[in-house]
Image 1 (spheres, rainbow, N blue to C red):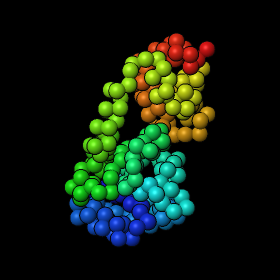
Image 2: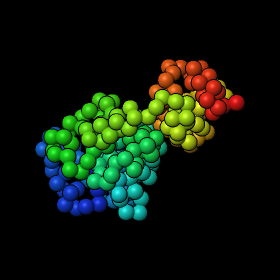
Image 3: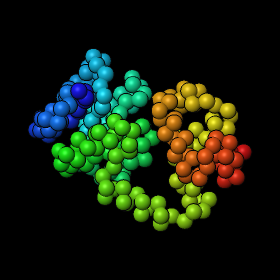
Length: 210
């Protein structure tokens, strides 16, 4: 049986979602806020974590960070009714496994969670199409690549150039190794390279590194 921690501050939505998941065979621990979630995190480890983004006091970003600090390989899916484009980069940098809209049907919710636990990135189709359109509309120039690299990706590049291993980079930037691995994969994709050496050479040519 798959265990899951569900966190949402809307009582009716929390109860309804818990019921749907339990009907599909999940063992669900429900929490209405981050304080309850922390208690459950201290008591148990779960196969997956489904978090609302807009929580009171401690939001979904912070709760995700706390969870990954405790369990770096945790499968976390964010469930939100907000505009995803505003939060996508930050959530991916944190290390979430996917994003699901609160309007998802029960079957879509279960399918999304299942795929995330299999290591697949889960995104709403309409949002994924927007990302693809945006990506293809960019010209493949060095300036475009510069704009696409995030601050964390630049920091990781600098540490790679200094010979840092993943665990060293994670310690230096106060993040999990899983986050570092994601950032390195993102850097490789954006710079169109397949190794650290190529990434350093490409970044040097672009002026990121001296």
